[in-house]
Image (tube, rainbow, N blue to C red):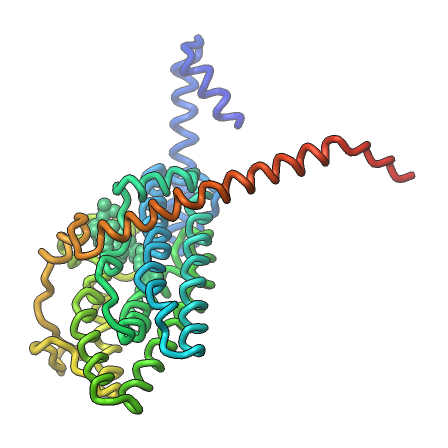
Length: 346
Ligand code: BYC
């Protein structure tokens, strides 16, 4: 506060403007040094701490995209809640989709600590300016898609999100701890549902699982983002301890973990170039269709328009709930103000 007051004087052209500018610059340099030292030590930055504007902007970009992905991610699965084959599967799916709504709320709240309001973030989503994960722009054609989304999409999400529990921005890191615990249940329920279909299902059910794996495999490995050589944000995000691993490293970890799971399930991953590379100690995989990825990110995937419309409709149809909640809060406030003051305790 004190420094800001001096700043204002200087900007208003007071006699000491030059001196005040210099003092402000020195204070900024000292704050930058403290911030850099905290980052270099692997420390955490809290909402009240000073941070460079570019760090704040990067975090708002990533956390708001992440929040949007969670609430848009409710849509492809939401479609199947009323179509689940048994009460047990319906209850699990319902819980999972509700968790995703909760993840969106934690993440919007974490982004709000950086000074961007939820209304601003939602305006950007509804106006088609904000990004959300490419994966949610594909249709969910059969019940097997629910299992495959849990196994592959949530599996990819965990791989990407566990390192975010150590992200340098503490409110985001704290939100991610809780989210990752729930994501792990999401991944397990998906895998277990596929195992049941593959072990106890009919031939048609097994074919349905394979078809879902064929459709979701490539979009799932695209989720990690463009190759490192084509990822403009990775360098700074890694230097700032926001991202701990590169897009390609996480993608490789995911492929390495998933190949064995596919074998146990008894499904084939749709990549003829997938083979163990003894020298690298990793699975090699085929070329990813980045034109398809950018097309989807650019708004032209199979379901982009439908997903965005569903969010806009939900916002507009929910207007009366927001108005009623505000009216209720105002009424309570007025009633509290009208009450006689409590006598002071002796
Ligand atoms: N889809 O420089 P890069 C979930 C954009 S939620 C769309 O590598 P960065 C789940 C990127 O934003 C899944 N856009 O960026 C929920 C950037 O554009 P801008 C979401 C993508 O940020 C419900 C440009 O491409 N997870 O799993 O360093 C149910 C260049 O990329 C994508 C998160 O959000 C994509 N796939 O790295 C089930 C996790 N990839 O902003 C599951 C947090 C890249 O410059 N986010 N872009 O215009 C991250 O870890 C990072 O933001 C990313 C991208 C790895 C996604």
